[in-house]
Image 1: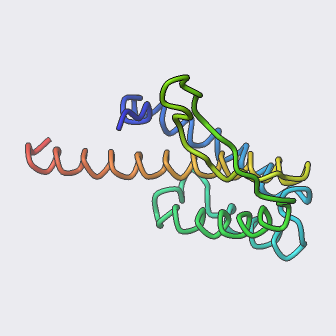
Image 2 (image 1 turned 135 degrees about the vertical axis):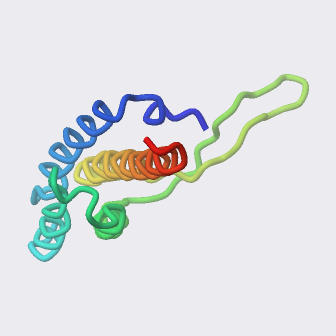
Length: 146
């Protein structure tokens, strides 16, 4: 897997994570995306745990999973229909070559939720990479006594 987050210096990765957290916190906690006041409160509570000094003290991905789950439910409510879309090409000799994927037709709010979910999933990936890189650094330091 070619993931750019594996090649960034740790300081830059952390800076990007903090920037992404700020952006996602603003978007996910908005009334337009969160929906109900109950969802908004739950998302705000989960996102509060993301601060510089608390970022690595707990499993950050668990808090994100809660937010993603809430917004996935909201996305289902904003789905108008699911339509099959062909991705591929039509070969004159062999016919249609490709796959059919079911895609959602979303409301305007659904589009915003979908974009926010994409950012949350990127943030989750970034946090996982950071966690693995820090664990690898601890292993190397322990092994070679640095």
